[in-house]
Image (tube, rainbow, N blue to C red; front, side, top):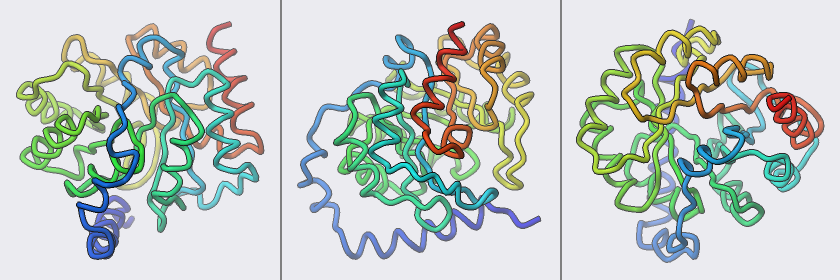
Length: 267
């Protein structure tokens, strides 16, 4: 099967060239959202439901979700439902998103927003800042250790928090090595239950990796979560955050679906 991760990162690099040519760094720095004070993802997850509710129109494996709700309806619905944060995909070719989605989401909600994209270049971190994100995703499978460290430092310098994403023990050990050199305690590590090369999901991946997490790190389980009972079980193991998108976006009213899900977790 084709390596979807490689296909996405290659396309991302190509798209970046065009955006860099069109919008220099100085233009990003002059945008209104660039100077706003970010909201802490870490703090919001700690004190709230722990649900990071995602807006995405499609996925490489499932195609379009054909959700009739507008982005504004979705993100406001998520916030009203009690989500701790919003995850926003801005990749157009594979997920149907744009940077303007991030800007619109920022104008509609007060909870933190994660720019959940395939970050491979420092420029994207400045984009995230300029378009209103509070945190970025750094995927271990996309970056070597030096790139992870450089991009982490850039994000921290810009006041953004980081969700490090891992899929296996080797990647987790690399992230542990990188984070020991960072002057912050607010990083978050997420286990992606979806194999980014073949897009198959297995919740067991979260269960297997959690015992190897460093102490005092906020642990997130991502992808393939469709049952509140799974969240309850993962919480008992030590997970504090749960990134859920498809389960909500495949319905006509993602906000209402999110509200029902959060109520079920609390019951």
